[in-house]
Length: 287
Image (cartoon, rainbow, N blue to C red; front, side, top):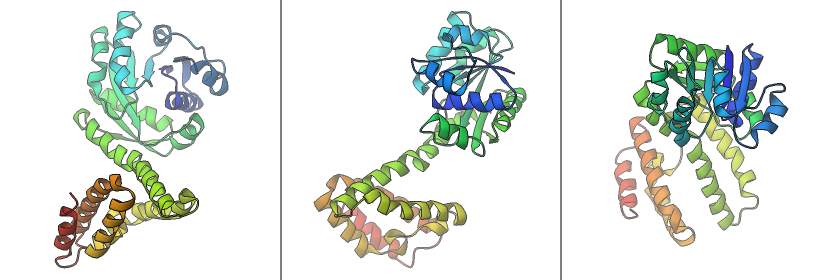
């Protein structure tokens, strides 16, 4: 299949590399000022064109642009006559649905949404991490779903079908699992630094990695540890007092996540006796 990538950033470039390795022809790429350099490094011989010219070249047009730009870019391609009946136009957003590509439908082009459930700080890591990751595929019909699943398998990934209306919820889950984990590590680093711990990130990493490994091996319910799931109201109180003195902005986050931990522990049947009520009583004083 001839593939054009518009928005050849980290993910778009990596997908192009992997699809080319799988036997697809990368017909053209388009993007901002850094695109030419990435193409020269990773996609030697692939022309770097404007968006409309690139789209003309692809049976499959992949939009690797920011979420809020998808609908605008799709509409621009339509206005410039860059799309035709029989082409597929796919975006790579996790949160956006097929409506973001509504503008392409009158041309006879068909929309598709493909999202790798992984994090990619650079092209090299994306090339290494896409194979083996899960990829969400959303399409209008069986033909589109089959195409999306085939693309995912060509990338070495594991496809699953995702209902269009479920994509924002799916992406919110990904935000918790990735972005907010990093945010939590950032906050923990700050607190350890305030406590006088040298090289806080290095100190944290064994704990973080073991926690993630336990969650994957045992499941979140069995992997959960800490004062909330133990019903240790006194420790929760001491934590919150310490935060209120050293880092008061962290108190709401601690309270919110303690309640999430209580819910998880309760569902797992792990909170002893009336322990939840004791912890809830402490948390209520800090709300």
